[in-house]
Length: 518
Image 1 (tube, helix red, strand yellow):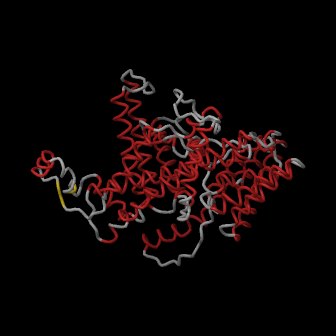
Image 2: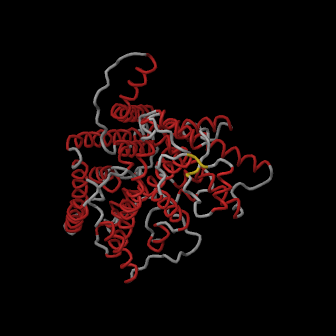
Image 3: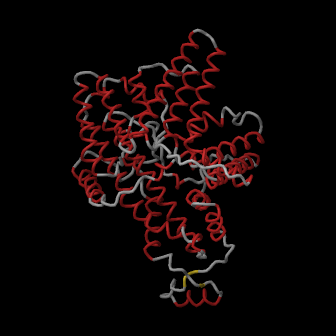
Protein backbone atom coordinates (compact mmCIF):
# COMPACT_ATOMS: atom_id res chain seq x y z
CA UNK A 1 0.00 0.00 0.00
CA UNK A 2 1.34 3.40 -0.96
CA UNK A 3 1.11 6.57 1.11
CA UNK A 4 0.21 8.34 -2.15
CA UNK A 5 -2.95 6.33 -2.83
CA UNK A 6 -6.66 6.92 -2.27
CA UNK A 7 -6.95 3.58 -0.45
CA UNK A 8 -4.37 4.64 2.11
CA UNK A 9 -5.50 8.24 2.61
CA UNK A 10 -9.27 7.72 2.67
CA UNK A 11 -9.60 4.17 4.05
CA UNK A 12 -6.59 2.70 5.84
CA UNK A 13 -5.40 5.82 7.69
CA UNK A 14 -8.80 6.98 9.07
CA UNK A 15 -9.70 3.45 10.24
CA UNK A 16 -6.34 2.96 11.97
CA UNK A 17 -6.48 6.38 13.65
CA UNK A 18 -10.05 5.87 14.91
CA UNK A 19 -9.27 2.35 16.15
CA UNK A 20 -6.07 3.44 17.88
CA UNK A 21 -7.56 6.30 19.90
CA UNK A 22 -10.78 4.41 20.66
CA UNK A 23 -8.87 1.41 22.01
CA UNK A 24 -6.50 3.71 23.91
CA UNK A 25 -9.47 4.71 26.10
CA UNK A 26 -9.78 1.05 27.12
CA UNK A 27 -6.16 -0.11 27.23
CA UNK A 28 -2.86 1.26 25.98
CA UNK A 29 -1.71 -2.28 25.30
CA UNK A 30 -4.75 -2.90 23.09
CA UNK A 31 -4.05 0.34 21.20
CA UNK A 32 -0.39 -0.56 20.65
CA UNK A 33 -1.36 -4.06 19.53
CA UNK A 34 -3.95 -2.60 17.14
CA UNK A 35 -1.32 -0.33 15.60
CA UNK A 36 1.10 -3.27 15.26
CA UNK A 37 -1.59 -5.41 13.58
CA UNK A 38 -2.50 -2.52 11.27
CA UNK A 39 1.19 -2.17 10.36
CA UNK A 40 1.35 -5.89 9.54
CA UNK A 41 -1.74 -5.48 7.33
CA UNK A 42 -0.09 -2.49 5.66
CA UNK A 43 2.98 -4.61 4.93
CA UNK A 44 0.97 -7.66 3.84
CA UNK A 45 -1.12 -5.58 1.43
CA UNK A 46 1.89 -5.77 -0.91
CA UNK A 47 2.51 -9.52 -0.53
CA UNK A 48 0.88 -11.51 2.32
CA UNK A 49 3.45 -14.30 1.92
CA UNK A 50 6.19 -12.15 3.44
CA UNK A 51 4.29 -11.29 6.62
CA UNK A 52 5.49 -14.64 7.97
CA UNK A 53 9.08 -13.70 7.17
CA UNK A 54 8.70 -10.37 9.01
CA UNK A 55 7.06 -12.02 12.05
CA UNK A 56 9.74 -14.73 12.11
CA UNK A 57 12.46 -12.07 12.05
CA UNK A 58 10.74 -10.19 14.90
CA UNK A 59 10.31 -13.31 17.02
CA UNK A 60 13.88 -14.53 16.56
CA UNK A 61 15.48 -11.15 17.21
CA UNK A 62 13.34 -10.50 20.27
CA UNK A 63 14.32 -13.92 21.66
CA UNK A 64 18.00 -13.28 21.03
CA UNK A 65 17.67 -9.85 22.62
CA UNK A 66 16.19 -11.44 25.75
CA UNK A 67 18.95 -14.07 25.87
CA UNK A 68 21.66 -11.43 25.45
CA UNK A 69 20.10 -9.33 28.23
CA UNK A 70 19.86 -12.39 30.49
CA UNK A 71 23.50 -13.29 29.83
CA UNK A 72 24.48 -9.71 30.69
CA UNK A 73 22.63 -9.88 34.02
CA UNK A 74 24.41 -13.17 34.80
CA UNK A 75 27.76 -11.58 33.80
CA UNK A 76 28.34 -14.28 31.20
CA UNK A 77 30.19 -11.99 28.80
CA UNK A 78 31.46 -14.73 26.51
CA UNK A 79 27.98 -16.20 26.01
CA UNK A 80 26.59 -12.70 25.47
CA UNK A 81 29.15 -12.00 22.74
CA UNK A 82 28.55 -15.34 21.01
CA UNK A 83 24.79 -14.77 21.02
CA UNK A 84 25.26 -11.31 19.49
CA UNK A 85 27.58 -12.60 16.76
CA UNK A 86 25.24 -15.46 15.90
CA UNK A 87 22.16 -13.21 15.81
CA UNK A 88 23.82 -10.57 13.61
CA UNK A 89 25.16 -13.28 11.30
CA UNK A 90 21.67 -14.78 10.98
CA UNK A 91 20.19 -11.36 10.13
CA UNK A 92 22.86 -10.64 7.54
CA UNK A 93 22.47 -14.14 6.06
CA UNK A 94 18.74 -13.58 5.62
CA UNK A 95 19.35 -10.17 4.05
CA UNK A 96 22.15 -11.58 1.91
CA UNK A 97 20.01 -14.39 0.53
CA UNK A 98 17.12 -12.22 -0.55
CA UNK A 99 19.12 -9.21 -1.68
CA UNK A 100 22.52 -10.45 -2.84
CA UNK A 101 22.30 -14.15 -3.78
CA UNK A 102 21.60 -13.49 -7.46
CA UNK A 103 24.18 -10.68 -7.56
CA UNK A 104 26.84 -13.02 -6.15
CA UNK A 105 25.95 -15.88 -8.51
CA UNK A 106 25.83 -13.56 -11.53
CA UNK A 107 29.20 -12.00 -10.64
CA UNK A 108 30.82 -15.44 -10.25
CA UNK A 109 29.38 -16.57 -13.58
CA UNK A 110 30.75 -13.46 -15.29
CA UNK A 111 34.22 -13.66 -13.74
CA UNK A 112 34.71 -17.44 -13.81
CA UNK A 113 32.74 -18.29 -16.92
CA UNK A 114 30.50 -20.66 -14.94
CA UNK A 115 26.81 -21.23 -15.52
CA UNK A 116 25.31 -21.50 -12.07
CA UNK A 117 21.53 -21.08 -12.26
CA UNK A 118 20.04 -17.81 -11.03
CA UNK A 119 16.94 -18.25 -8.90
CA UNK A 120 13.89 -16.01 -9.09
CA UNK A 121 14.05 -14.36 -5.68
CA UNK A 122 11.54 -11.60 -4.91
CA UNK A 123 13.06 -8.97 -2.65
CA UNK A 124 10.77 -8.41 0.37
CA UNK A 125 9.84 -4.77 0.77
CA UNK A 126 11.68 -2.99 3.55
CA UNK A 127 13.91 -5.96 4.43
CA UNK A 128 16.98 -3.72 4.68
CA UNK A 129 15.21 -1.33 7.04
CA UNK A 130 13.68 -3.87 9.43
CA UNK A 131 16.92 -5.88 9.43
CA UNK A 132 19.09 -2.87 10.28
CA UNK A 133 16.57 -1.69 12.88
CA UNK A 134 16.79 -5.04 14.66
CA UNK A 135 20.58 -5.30 14.39
CA UNK A 136 20.73 -1.92 16.15
CA UNK A 137 18.40 -3.32 18.85
CA UNK A 138 20.68 -6.35 19.38
CA UNK A 139 23.83 -4.22 19.64
CA UNK A 140 22.12 -1.75 21.99
CA UNK A 141 20.99 -4.70 24.14
CA UNK A 142 24.55 -6.03 24.20
CA UNK A 143 25.81 -2.60 25.30
CA UNK A 144 23.17 -2.34 28.03
CA UNK A 145 21.27 0.55 26.41
CA UNK A 146 17.90 -1.23 26.15
CA UNK A 147 15.68 -0.71 29.19
CA UNK A 148 12.32 -2.14 28.09
CA UNK A 149 11.40 -5.53 26.61
CA UNK A 150 7.63 -5.32 26.16
CA UNK A 151 6.94 -7.67 23.23
CA UNK A 152 3.94 -5.71 21.94
CA UNK A 153 5.97 -2.50 21.95
CA UNK A 154 8.91 -4.27 20.32
CA UNK A 155 6.68 -5.62 17.53
CA UNK A 156 5.29 -2.13 17.00
CA UNK A 157 8.80 -0.68 17.06
CA UNK A 158 9.82 -2.93 14.14
CA UNK A 159 6.59 -2.95 12.13
CA UNK A 160 5.47 0.67 12.69
CA UNK A 161 4.09 1.43 9.25
CA UNK A 162 5.26 5.07 8.84
CA UNK A 163 8.88 3.86 8.79
CA UNK A 164 8.65 0.16 7.84
CA UNK A 165 9.18 0.31 4.07
CA UNK A 166 11.72 3.08 3.53
CA UNK A 167 12.89 4.32 6.91
CA UNK A 168 13.99 6.14 8.90
CA UNK A 169 16.21 3.53 10.55
CA UNK A 170 15.07 3.68 14.17
CA UNK A 171 16.88 3.31 17.47
CA UNK A 172 15.15 1.32 20.20
CA UNK A 173 15.84 4.05 22.77
CA UNK A 174 14.10 6.67 20.59
CA UNK A 175 10.83 4.81 20.09
CA UNK A 176 10.14 2.46 23.02
CA UNK A 177 9.83 5.26 25.62
CA UNK A 178 7.29 7.00 23.35
CA UNK A 179 5.17 3.85 23.08
CA UNK A 180 5.09 3.73 26.90
CA UNK A 181 4.13 7.41 27.39
CA UNK A 182 0.60 8.24 28.51
CA UNK A 183 0.49 11.29 26.21
CA UNK A 184 0.96 9.14 23.10
CA UNK A 185 -2.44 7.56 23.61
CA UNK A 186 -4.37 10.80 24.09
CA UNK A 187 -5.92 12.38 21.01
CA UNK A 188 -4.39 15.79 20.29
CA UNK A 189 -5.76 18.35 17.84
CA UNK A 190 -2.30 19.89 17.66
CA UNK A 191 -0.64 16.58 16.72
CA UNK A 192 -3.32 15.93 14.13
CA UNK A 193 -2.98 19.39 12.57
CA UNK A 194 0.83 19.36 12.59
CA UNK A 195 0.97 15.79 11.29
CA UNK A 196 -1.54 16.41 8.50
CA UNK A 197 0.32 19.54 7.43
CA UNK A 198 3.67 17.74 7.20
CA UNK A 199 2.03 14.79 5.44
CA UNK A 200 0.41 16.95 2.75
CA UNK A 201 3.60 18.93 2.16
CA UNK A 202 5.34 15.61 1.54
CA UNK A 203 2.50 14.36 -0.67
CA UNK A 204 2.78 17.51 -2.80
CA UNK A 205 6.55 17.02 -3.16
CA UNK A 206 6.06 13.44 -4.30
CA UNK A 207 3.04 13.75 -6.59
CA UNK A 208 3.57 17.17 -8.16
CA UNK A 209 7.32 17.73 -8.08
CA UNK A 210 9.09 14.35 -8.09
CA UNK A 211 6.65 12.51 -10.35
CA UNK A 212 6.51 15.28 -12.93
CA UNK A 213 10.24 15.72 -13.39
CA UNK A 214 10.56 11.92 -13.43
CA UNK A 215 8.98 11.99 -16.90
CA UNK A 216 12.28 13.19 -18.42
CA UNK A 217 14.59 10.66 -16.77
CA UNK A 218 13.99 7.35 -18.64
CA UNK A 219 14.60 8.74 -22.13
CA UNK A 220 18.12 9.84 -21.11
CA UNK A 221 19.09 6.72 -19.15
CA UNK A 222 17.67 4.37 -21.80
CA UNK A 223 19.49 6.14 -24.65
CA UNK A 224 22.94 4.44 -24.42
CA UNK A 225 21.39 0.95 -24.60
CA UNK A 226 19.56 2.04 -27.76
CA UNK A 227 22.78 3.23 -29.38
CA UNK A 228 21.93 6.92 -29.04
CA UNK A 229 24.95 9.18 -28.47
CA UNK A 230 23.84 11.75 -25.92
CA UNK A 231 25.08 15.31 -26.08
CA UNK A 232 26.73 17.09 -23.15
CA UNK A 233 23.54 19.05 -22.42
CA UNK A 234 21.30 15.98 -22.65
CA UNK A 235 23.50 13.96 -20.30
CA UNK A 236 23.61 16.71 -17.70
CA UNK A 237 19.89 17.37 -18.17
CA UNK A 238 19.02 13.72 -17.48
CA UNK A 239 21.34 13.53 -14.48
CA UNK A 240 19.93 16.74 -13.00
CA UNK A 241 16.37 15.54 -13.55
CA UNK A 242 17.12 12.31 -11.71
CA UNK A 243 18.95 14.15 -8.91
CA UNK A 244 15.87 16.34 -8.41
CA UNK A 245 13.41 13.45 -8.78
CA UNK A 246 15.23 11.47 -6.10
CA UNK A 247 15.52 14.55 -3.88
CA UNK A 248 11.81 15.37 -3.87
CA UNK A 249 10.76 11.70 -3.85
CA UNK A 250 12.80 10.91 -0.74
CA UNK A 251 12.11 14.28 0.88
CA UNK A 252 8.40 13.74 0.25
CA UNK A 253 8.47 10.25 1.74
CA UNK A 254 10.41 11.46 4.78
CA UNK A 255 7.89 14.25 5.39
CA UNK A 256 4.95 11.89 4.96
CA UNK A 257 6.44 9.36 7.41
CA UNK A 258 7.05 12.07 10.03
CA UNK A 259 3.58 13.54 9.51
CA UNK A 260 1.79 10.19 9.75
CA UNK A 261 3.66 9.30 12.93
CA UNK A 262 2.89 12.68 14.49
CA UNK A 263 -0.85 12.01 14.03
CA UNK A 264 -0.39 9.07 16.43
CA UNK A 265 1.55 11.23 18.88
CA UNK A 266 4.91 9.64 18.03
CA UNK A 267 7.85 11.80 16.90
CA UNK A 268 10.25 10.17 14.42
CA UNK A 269 13.91 11.15 13.97
CA UNK A 270 14.74 13.57 11.20
CA UNK A 271 15.98 11.78 8.08
CA UNK A 272 16.34 14.51 5.45
CA UNK A 273 17.56 18.08 5.91
CA UNK A 274 18.11 20.00 2.65
CA UNK A 275 21.21 18.01 1.58
CA UNK A 276 21.67 19.92 -1.69
CA UNK A 277 22.45 23.03 0.37
CA UNK A 278 25.59 21.32 1.68
CA UNK A 279 28.95 22.97 1.03
CA UNK A 280 30.92 19.70 1.21
CA UNK A 281 30.39 15.94 1.11
CA UNK A 282 30.80 15.54 4.87
CA UNK A 283 27.90 17.90 5.40
CA UNK A 284 25.92 16.18 2.63
CA UNK A 285 26.01 12.88 4.53
CA UNK A 286 24.92 14.67 7.70
CA UNK A 287 21.82 15.79 5.82
CA UNK A 288 20.97 12.93 3.40
CA UNK A 289 19.34 9.76 4.83
CA UNK A 290 20.53 10.90 8.22
CA UNK A 291 19.48 7.79 10.17
CA UNK A 292 21.26 5.47 7.73
CA UNK A 293 24.39 7.63 8.00
CA UNK A 294 24.09 7.38 11.78
CA UNK A 295 23.70 3.59 11.60
CA UNK A 296 26.73 3.19 9.32
CA UNK A 297 28.78 5.43 11.61
CA UNK A 298 27.76 3.77 14.89
CA UNK A 299 27.64 0.12 13.81
CA UNK A 300 30.23 -0.06 11.03
CA UNK A 301 32.65 2.89 10.83
CA UNK A 302 33.34 3.14 14.58
CA UNK A 303 33.65 -0.65 15.13
CA UNK A 304 36.13 -0.73 12.22
CA UNK A 305 38.27 1.71 14.18
CA UNK A 306 36.85 5.04 13.04
CA UNK A 307 39.52 7.73 13.19
CA UNK A 308 41.31 6.23 16.21
CA UNK A 309 44.05 4.34 14.33
CA UNK A 310 45.71 6.97 12.18
CA UNK A 311 44.80 8.82 9.01
CA UNK A 312 45.45 5.93 6.60
CA UNK A 313 43.21 3.58 8.57
CA UNK A 314 40.60 6.32 8.89
CA UNK A 315 40.47 6.78 5.12
CA UNK A 316 40.31 3.03 4.57
CA UNK A 317 37.43 2.81 7.06
CA UNK A 318 35.61 5.63 5.29
CA UNK A 319 35.89 3.98 1.88
CA UNK A 320 34.93 0.57 3.28
CA UNK A 321 31.88 2.04 5.02
CA UNK A 322 30.71 3.83 1.88
CA UNK A 323 31.30 0.77 -0.33
CA UNK A 324 29.11 -1.29 1.98
CA UNK A 325 26.63 1.59 2.16
CA UNK A 326 26.45 1.56 -1.63
CA UNK A 327 25.94 -2.21 -1.65
CA UNK A 328 23.17 -1.77 0.94
CA UNK A 329 21.28 0.40 -1.53
CA UNK A 330 21.32 -2.24 -4.25
CA UNK A 331 22.84 -5.51 -5.39
CA UNK A 332 24.85 -4.29 -8.36
CA UNK A 333 28.27 -2.99 -9.30
CA UNK A 334 26.78 0.39 -10.13
CA UNK A 335 25.82 0.80 -6.47
CA UNK A 336 29.28 -0.33 -5.35
CA UNK A 337 30.87 2.30 -7.60
CA UNK A 338 28.44 4.94 -6.33
CA UNK A 339 29.44 4.10 -2.75
CA UNK A 340 33.12 4.08 -3.73
CA UNK A 341 32.83 7.51 -5.33
CA UNK A 342 31.35 8.93 -2.13
CA UNK A 343 34.09 7.21 -0.14
CA UNK A 344 36.70 8.93 -2.31
CA UNK A 345 34.82 12.23 -2.02
CA UNK A 346 34.90 11.92 1.79
CA UNK A 347 38.62 11.10 1.84
CA UNK A 348 39.36 14.16 -0.31
CA UNK A 349 37.12 16.32 1.87
CA UNK A 350 38.82 15.18 5.10
CA UNK A 351 42.23 15.70 3.47
CA UNK A 352 41.26 19.23 2.49
CA UNK A 353 40.13 19.98 6.04
CA UNK A 354 43.39 18.60 7.43
CA UNK A 355 45.32 20.83 5.04
CA UNK A 356 43.33 23.89 6.14
CA UNK A 357 44.01 23.02 9.78
CA UNK A 358 47.74 22.66 9.04
CA UNK A 359 47.67 26.13 7.47
CA UNK A 360 46.19 27.55 10.66
CA UNK A 361 42.62 27.86 9.35
CA UNK A 362 39.51 26.61 11.11
CA UNK A 363 37.82 24.12 8.74
CA UNK A 364 34.52 24.59 10.59
CA UNK A 365 34.52 28.38 10.22
CA UNK A 366 31.78 29.83 7.98
CA UNK A 367 32.86 30.49 4.40
CA UNK A 368 32.58 33.83 2.66
CA UNK A 369 29.57 34.13 0.36
CA UNK A 370 31.55 33.58 -2.88
CA UNK A 371 33.31 30.51 -1.44
CA UNK A 372 30.03 29.24 0.04
CA UNK A 373 28.32 29.42 -3.34
CA UNK A 374 31.26 27.84 -5.17
CA UNK A 375 31.60 25.04 -2.60
CA UNK A 376 27.87 24.36 -2.65
CA UNK A 377 27.75 24.23 -6.44
CA UNK A 378 30.81 21.99 -6.68
CA UNK A 379 29.38 19.61 -4.06
CA UNK A 380 26.04 19.46 -5.85
CA UNK A 381 27.66 18.71 -9.22
CA UNK A 382 29.84 15.97 -7.67
CA UNK A 383 26.77 14.38 -6.06
CA UNK A 384 24.83 14.63 -9.34
CA UNK A 385 27.62 12.89 -11.24
CA UNK A 386 27.62 10.05 -8.70
CA UNK A 387 23.81 9.69 -8.98
CA UNK A 388 24.33 8.51 -12.56
CA UNK A 389 25.75 5.23 -11.23
CA UNK A 390 22.94 5.05 -8.69
CA UNK A 391 20.25 5.28 -11.41
CA UNK A 392 21.84 3.51 -14.39
CA UNK A 393 20.71 -0.04 -15.11
CA UNK A 394 24.24 -1.23 -15.91
CA UNK A 395 27.86 -0.12 -15.97
CA UNK A 396 27.86 0.58 -19.71
CA UNK A 397 25.01 3.06 -19.36
CA UNK A 398 26.56 4.70 -16.31
CA UNK A 399 30.05 5.11 -17.77
CA UNK A 400 28.70 6.33 -21.11
CA UNK A 401 26.60 9.07 -19.49
CA UNK A 402 29.34 10.02 -17.02
CA UNK A 403 31.95 10.33 -19.78
CA UNK A 404 29.61 12.57 -21.76
CA UNK A 405 28.98 14.73 -18.68
CA UNK A 406 32.73 15.11 -18.17
CA UNK A 407 33.16 16.34 -21.76
CA UNK A 408 34.92 13.30 -23.24
CA UNK A 409 32.56 13.48 -26.23
CA UNK A 410 32.86 17.21 -26.65
CA UNK A 411 30.69 20.07 -25.46
CA UNK A 412 27.92 21.13 -27.82
CA UNK A 413 24.86 23.28 -27.21
CA UNK A 414 21.55 22.96 -29.09
CA UNK A 415 21.44 25.35 -32.04
CA UNK A 416 18.08 26.73 -30.89
CA UNK A 417 19.61 28.10 -27.71
CA UNK A 418 20.28 31.85 -27.75
CA UNK A 419 18.57 32.17 -31.14
CA UNK A 420 16.86 35.30 -29.86
CA UNK A 421 20.19 36.83 -28.81
CA UNK A 422 22.06 37.18 -32.14
CA UNK A 423 25.33 38.45 -30.70
CA UNK A 424 25.77 35.51 -28.32
CA UNK A 425 24.47 33.04 -30.92
CA UNK A 426 26.99 34.30 -33.48
CA UNK A 427 29.88 34.09 -31.01
CA UNK A 428 29.00 30.52 -29.97
CA UNK A 429 28.60 29.45 -33.60
CA UNK A 430 31.98 30.96 -34.48
CA UNK A 431 33.60 28.84 -31.75
CA UNK A 432 31.84 25.64 -32.92
CA UNK A 433 29.88 25.27 -29.69
CA UNK A 434 26.65 24.28 -31.43
CA UNK A 435 26.08 20.72 -32.49
CA UNK A 436 23.38 18.22 -33.49
CA UNK A 437 20.89 17.24 -30.81
CA UNK A 438 18.66 14.20 -30.25
CA UNK A 439 15.85 16.45 -29.09
CA UNK A 440 15.90 15.00 -25.57
CA UNK A 441 16.79 18.22 -23.75
CA UNK A 442 13.39 19.81 -24.21
CA UNK A 443 12.16 23.17 -22.97
CA UNK A 444 9.95 21.33 -20.47
CA UNK A 445 13.00 19.58 -18.99
CA UNK A 446 14.95 22.82 -18.68
CA UNK A 447 12.03 24.63 -17.05
CA UNK A 448 11.48 21.87 -14.48
CA UNK A 449 15.19 21.86 -13.64
CA UNK A 450 15.57 25.58 -12.95
CA UNK A 451 12.26 25.83 -11.06
CA UNK A 452 13.07 22.91 -8.77
CA UNK A 453 16.63 24.12 -8.21
CA UNK A 454 15.24 27.44 -7.00
CA UNK A 455 12.98 25.55 -4.57
CA UNK A 456 15.87 23.38 -3.38
CA UNK A 457 18.28 26.24 -2.78
CA UNK A 458 16.02 29.14 -1.76
CA UNK A 459 12.86 27.73 -0.16
CA UNK A 460 12.76 26.76 3.54
CA UNK A 461 12.44 23.04 4.21
CA UNK A 462 9.55 21.42 6.07
CA UNK A 463 11.21 21.38 9.48
CA UNK A 464 11.97 25.09 9.16
CA UNK A 465 8.36 25.82 8.23
CA UNK A 466 7.13 23.71 11.18
CA UNK A 467 9.89 24.75 13.60
CA UNK A 468 7.49 26.02 16.27
CA UNK A 469 6.09 22.49 16.80
CA UNK A 470 9.23 20.29 16.96
CA UNK A 471 8.36 18.22 13.87
CA UNK A 472 11.07 15.59 14.40
CA UNK A 473 13.62 14.37 16.92
CA UNK A 474 16.95 16.21 16.89
CA UNK A 475 15.69 18.88 14.51
CA UNK A 476 18.53 21.38 13.92
CA UNK A 477 17.80 24.84 15.19
CA UNK A 478 17.16 27.10 12.17
CA UNK A 479 19.51 30.09 11.97
CA UNK A 480 16.66 32.56 11.79
CA UNK A 481 12.91 32.70 11.74
CA UNK A 482 11.52 32.12 8.26
CA UNK A 483 8.64 34.16 6.92
CA UNK A 484 6.95 30.89 5.97
CA UNK A 485 6.46 29.68 9.54
CA UNK A 486 3.33 27.54 9.87
CA UNK A 487 0.81 28.84 12.38
CA UNK A 488 -2.60 27.41 13.31
CA UNK A 489 -4.63 30.05 11.47
CA UNK A 490 -6.89 30.34 8.45
CA UNK A 491 -4.15 31.39 6.02
CA UNK A 492 -1.92 28.41 6.90
CA UNK A 493 -4.88 26.05 6.62
CA UNK A 494 -5.82 27.46 3.23
CA UNK A 495 -2.28 27.04 1.90
CA UNK A 496 -2.01 23.47 3.21
CA UNK A 497 -5.36 22.43 1.79
CA UNK A 498 -4.42 23.97 -1.55
CA UNK A 499 -1.33 21.75 -1.61
CA UNK A 500 -3.40 18.78 -0.47
CA UNK A 501 -6.15 19.31 -3.07
CA UNK A 502 -3.59 19.76 -5.87
CA UNK A 503 -1.85 16.52 -4.91
CA UNK A 504 -5.06 14.53 -4.34
CA UNK A 505 -6.56 15.29 -7.74
CA UNK A 506 -3.33 14.05 -9.35
CA UNK A 507 -3.19 10.65 -7.60
CA UNK A 508 -4.63 8.75 -10.56
CA UNK A 509 -1.10 8.07 -11.82
CA UNK A 510 0.37 6.35 -8.77
CA UNK A 511 4.10 5.68 -8.55
CA UNK A 512 6.11 3.92 -5.88
CA UNK A 513 8.74 5.71 -3.86
CA UNK A 514 12.26 5.20 -5.18
CA UNK A 515 13.57 3.99 -1.82
CA UNK A 516 11.04 1.12 -1.79
CA UNK A 517 13.46 -0.84 -3.99
CA UNK A 518 16.23 -0.72 -1.37
